[in-house]
Length: 124
Image 1 (cartoon, rainbow, N blue to C red):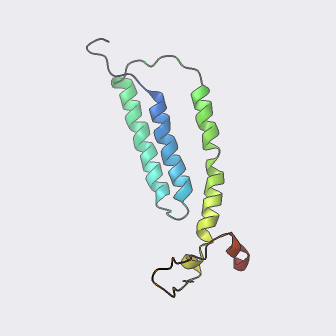
Image 2: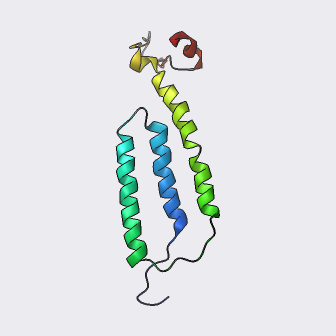
């Protein structure tokens, strides 16, 4: 390695960061809508800094095929399904939207949330 060359560009760490933000946003975004603008700002900052660092800091990356990009896109195709499933689970929470709280007889009991597959039919 030469003295004035930058560090190696390790692309799989970059993909993991993007996938992490995308999956967390899609998993919890319906319950926390503020995650969508936060993810947008995060992606924009990531894009801006990566553009600068590739142009001025990193070494010329080695030639790679598109296998990692196709794999990342295949992984991202599952995020809408996770968004729908976890979003339905969040919106069917009876304690949040139905103001239903199950009381306890003894302080040593664990409180039931009333939030499960058996309560789905009660919401309709």
